Amino acid sequence: MIFGFNTDIKHDDTVYHVQSEARESELLLQTQVFVRGRCIGKRATSYAEQASSGGFTDQQKEQILRDQHRMVLDSIRDSRLDSVLDKRDAPEVLAAIKELDVHWINADSVHSNQTLLMRLRVTDGGTAAQGARITVRFARPDAAPFYTQVVTDAAGDAEMKIDANESSLPDASVLVQASFSGRTATRKFQLKKVDA
Image (cartoon, rainbow, N blue to C red; front, top):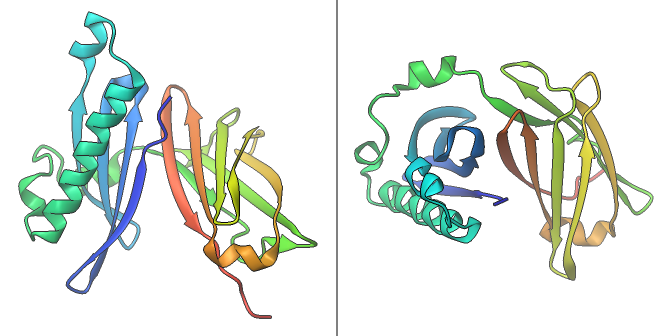
């Protein structure tokens, strides 16, 4: 299993969120570009041929995905994003595709009593994804990354608690990957201290 990549990049006055992940059930390595939460385009590479011939490792898959992610970032920096996106998928078409998604439903109140409490919801095409597996990677500068997994309930919700000192939160990040019906969605969240 490979985790995927998430990068925010600013060009001119626009912030682009570039998200790359393996779509195992479709044998695709997909990079999507979002502006203000809306998908404006994607690039996908099939690895069906490599997978069928055998011996295609997760490391090889991850390297292809990493190179594709970097190519899209470079195209944004060079003002040529349109030249690398798949032409068959206009933004209007992409908006209609039912995608797997992860929502952080208590992002405004997450830390108390030295504990980080995250409530997450997984949806598939806008409806609850019961039984989705969520893997969380909590990274902070003063300790090794911490991994945990939970499974969503009938409402597509899951809750997890992580012991964390509040002073480390501004430099911490949370990478969340949801897996459901052979598909994955990955989101990266930055943590910040909110003044009371």
